[in-house]
Image (cartoon, rainbow, N blue to C red; front, side, top):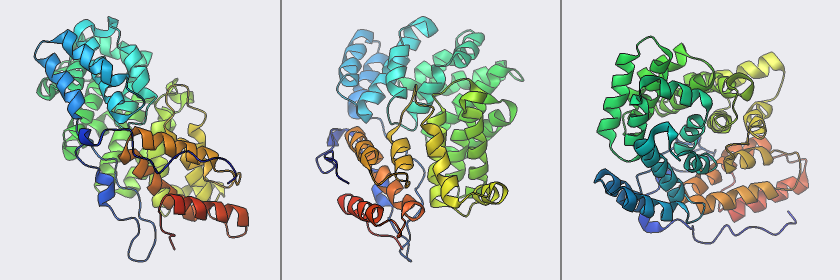
Length: 375
């Protein structure tokens, strides 16, 4: 632990007035026996006031005013609000010019960020497969997405349901089901989202199956169906892999969700099966998704990948972990808090009393993050 440390104690760069709470801090760190609790599902973050002003202007017909407001926010550093504004700008460009518009630059910014909702969607939207399917329905899906990203949620739902009805039993129906499921999740209806997501995952493969499984896994975790979630996310990880999907952008997000789950629930069937069938340790199963994500970072590079992988005892140097924590602190308090909890749940997999230097380094990291020592 010899390197200079990034500032992890300073205030976050995200304005405190912009967000309406941080759901992560409502959950305890340890259970009654002093063991680290599994990470809760990714919270649904409310729209910030700054972005809502821009999208409200767009919905009122003030296109240039909306562009100016949101461009200013999107360019103000690497934060959750700037990423949210970039996604809204992509929605405006899709609404105004369809797939021929200048939306790609904004999606690239979002995919390279830390948002577990917008990031994966942006990564999927950047692919030729998405653009091909979205272009096949005379713009209904594109208009639905544009409506969702600019805050017109009722119109978005109408468009997605229309596309499902029109394209029944065709490939475009799968994409429409996924987008409807994502919308229902984002609007607080996970039970309603499960059917279209499950249907899409069963009917398609590759990229869309990976994205449907990523979202379905979130629902199952929230329903405490952890074994089912593990199987779905493990399958989604395989479908999102570049060798299957032909693209890199989605895989890191799926790998993080699966890695978080098995780190906190190492007795799941999917872990047991890999230990029994491959003769590896639980720690290897937990490390594997984070390690795999390191080779899929051309489009998306969420900092939780670096934290999840570099905590494992390949080296006593925890520099990449500290850098990742600093990136997340700048992004939002919620992502930083999630990273703290990931460090805690990974502790039992990475701590080794035989390695004194590493034990000291992990203890120092816990103190710096104000984390208890789990049993």
